[in-house]
Amino acid sequence: MSTGWVILGYAVSYGAIAAYVAWMAVRIRSTHRYRGGSK
Amino acid sequence: MAPRIPSEITKGRDTSTDPPVPTARVDEPLEGGPSLWRGTWVLGAATLLLLVISLYGAWRAPHEETQGEAARLLFVHVPSVITAYLALGVGVLGAFWYLIRRSRWADQVSAAAIEIGVLFTGLTLLTGMIWGRLVWSVWWDWNDARMLSTAVLFFLYLGYLVLRRSINDPRVRAMRCAVLGVIASVQVPIVHYSVLWFRTLHQGPTLIRPDVANATMDDAFIQPLGMSVIAFVALFVLLLTVRLHLARTEIFMSYLNHQAGPVGAAIVPPRLGNPA
Image 1 (cartoon, rainbow over the protein chains, first blue to last red):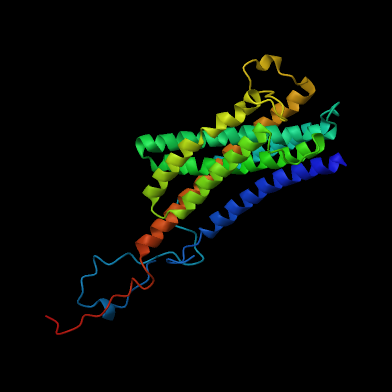
Image 2 (spheres, each protein chain N blue to C red):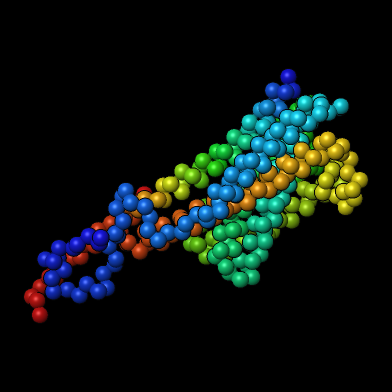
């Protein structure tokens, strides 16, 4: 029972970090195109 | 190649003061913007390796006598809080530096570090709640000094991020955020010393203490814990590097957008009236 909660804790932690990295990657990629004043 | 403005539009008019015409096409990469430090890829690979090793160490750690499997959360909860301390510390130092030198770079570093600090403080609270549920049978105890002070820390710096997004002027934003960042830093030692000042649910400090040589933890746990801390610190450096690159790129984009002017700025009005 507790093993499941431990796995959940690790999944939430590493998942949140991965989501943050993905968010930054998407934002960086979106700045790689210049559209003359509009994104 | 710069697009050509038809000569019948510019005929008889001095075009030397016209705003620059955007030269990049939609599918071309940004020209002249800040580039990601090449070492970031090496740092990323090293961080990934360290995280894998720390996960393996957490898996291989022995079964804890009193807490059972819940003790394995130690290897993500403690590194999270240490990384949060480190990130917020870097953020506060950047805020101090901005207040002293008005350095835009210090403002960027401060904001990036505090954003990462908020992330790890949130993870500390989440993993702590799961641990508390398993060990103390409560998700949350408002009477526990460590929990309450960490929650206050989280919302203080979350407010910093909200403030940052609510101000458009970069100088006003930097100044007000630097002041808030410095004032809110008083909460960090309160979080750390809360377990010494108040005898409540949360245990006392295990590693960050003056007599660390007498730390009340077995070597079988200290080794994977140390590995996890090193991995999370490397992760913080990686996240800070990438976040700074993003911030600098967005500043460059806003500069370009400002330079280009409104849509249609390349089109100039025709001269009216009788030409001289």
